[in-house]
Length: 458
Ligand SMILES: Cc1cc2nc3c(=O)[nH]c(=O)nc-3n(C[C@H](O)[C@H](O)[C@H](O)COP(=O)(O)OP(=O)(O)OC[C@H]3O[C@@H](n4cnc5c(N)ncnc54)[C@H](O)[C@@H]3O)c2cc1C
Picture 1 (tube, rainbow, N blue to C red):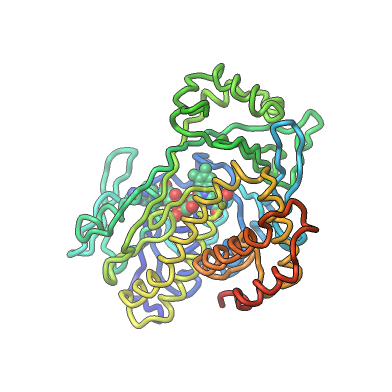
Picture 2: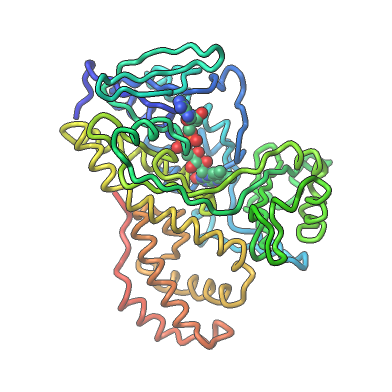
C-alpha cells in the first residue's frame, strides 16, 4: 500500500515499540497518531519504572538503523562483551558472547531510549498525544476512547486502523478479545525480580568490570548486573516467589534485614558494592514474570498487536525489546507490500507469531542456563566444543546465542538449529572430560551431515 492522506494509522502506546513504529511509518509517508497514557517524559522526566537498562542486540540495532537512530543510541550505550560469572567461591570468569568485539551486546537506558524515539517520531511527522489511556474501542464504529487520568476526562478518536503497542497489559488486546477470542494464555514463571543499584566508586569510576553482563548463578536463582553510562550498575535479583526445599523465595524475605542475610550468604561481593541496600530493597517492588501466548494478533484490517502486547516474554534472553523492534520493521514492511491492511496484518502475524513463540521458549530455557549451568563442567566443555566447531564451520555451526543476538535469522530457525546443535554437542562430548578427548573428525562429520549453511533474513 502507498500512504494516502485519507488514511491515518493510530497507535496505542508510545513505549519502545510504539515510538519506533510511529517513526518508521511516518518516515514512509503515513499519517500517524500516537496515544500514550503517561505524561510526555520529555517534559516531566522519565518515570523510571522497571528494568532501568536493557540489553540491545543486533535485531534491535538493525531496526534502529532503519530509522537512522543506531548511532545516537550507541553513543549512550555501554558495550557488554560477555557474561562475567561470579562463582560461589568468589572467583570470576568472563565468558565471551561472540568471537570478538564485533559480536557484543549493549546496555541502554530504557528511559533515554524512549525519549530519543519519541523525538524521532515527532520529527518524522507523527502526532503525539500524552495523558491518553486507551480505555475502550467500538470496532463497528471505528472509534477509540481515551481517558486522561489526571481528571478522568475522555475523548473519542475515529480510526481507520488501530495498532496496539500498549505493552503486556494491553487494553487493545482486551478490547479485541471481547469481540473475537485471541486464545490468550498467561503463564507465570513463579519467579519474580527486584532491582538494586551499584553506585559509582569513590573515584567516580565503575566499581566492577563495566564491559560485561555480570551474573551470580546460584542454582535455582541468580543476580545479574548491567552497566549504565553513569558508571552505575542496575542489579536484578531473580528469585522464586515462594521459598521451598532450602531455596529462598521472595515470600521468605519480609524485609531488608532478611534480604541482607541472603546476600551476605550468597552474593557477598555484590552486597559489598550496594551501599544503599536496605533503602533500595525497601523502595523497589517485586516485579512479576510471565509469558503471554496468543493464537491471533489481528482483527481483520482494523486492529493488530505487536511487541509485549502480543507476546510478552521472560527477560532472560534480553530479547523482548529486540523482538518488539523487529516486529516494527516487519509490520512496516508488510503494510508497504500488501494491498490492504487485512492482508498486511495477516502476513505480519504469519511471519512473526512462530518466531515470537520460538524466542519465548528460548528465553525460558536461558533462565535455566544462566542460573544453573554457566558454572557446570559439562556445559563448559560443550561451550568449548561449540566455539571450536563455530571456528571450523563458520557458515554451518553458529551458536544459538550468536544466532539470536548477533544475526537476524528468524528466531524459529535459531531455535530449531539450536536443538540440532545441542544434541550434537551432547553426543560428541559424551564420556569426555577435556576438549582433547573429543573425536573432532566425528564431530565435523555430524556438522556436515546435519546442518545446512545458515543464511540471515533479508
Ligand atoms: C526485568 C526486565 C528486564 C528486561 N530486559 C530486557 C533486555 O535486556 N533486552 C530486551 O530486549 N528486552 C528486555 N525486557 C523486555 C522489554 O522491556 C519489553 O519487551 C519492551 O519494553 C516491550 O516494548 P513495548 O513497546 O511492546 O511495551 P512497553 O515498553 O511496555 O510500552 C508500552 C507503552 O504503552 C503505554 N500504555 C500501556 N497501556 C496503555 C493504554 N491503555 N493506552 C495508552 N498507552 C498505554 C505504556 O505507558 C508504555 O509507554 C525486559 C523486561 C523486564 C521486565
